[in-house]
Length: 57
View 1 (spheres, rainbow, N blue to C red):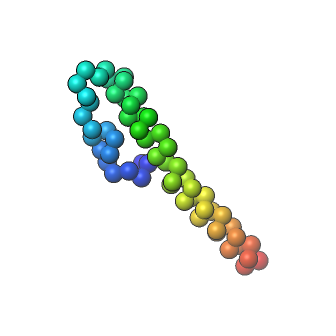
View 2: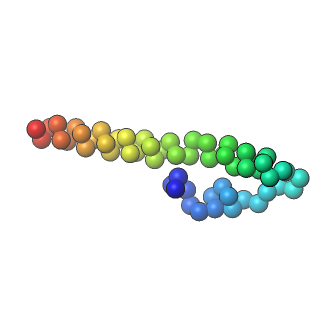
View 3: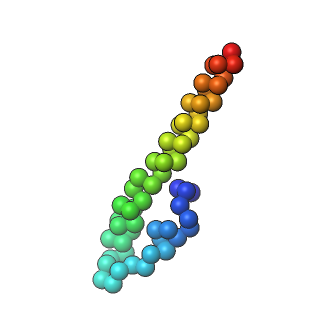
């Protein structure tokens, strides 16, 4: 979903002694900005498409 291979974050075993909520928090911190490159690529494609449409008009 975020452009990462399956299990990239969730496939890492929980460290001994770490609570489940703490483990989930750590997973979310690791992937925090993981979607940003995909969003930037999408925005660039949209802008290029618009520029091509305007140039063709």
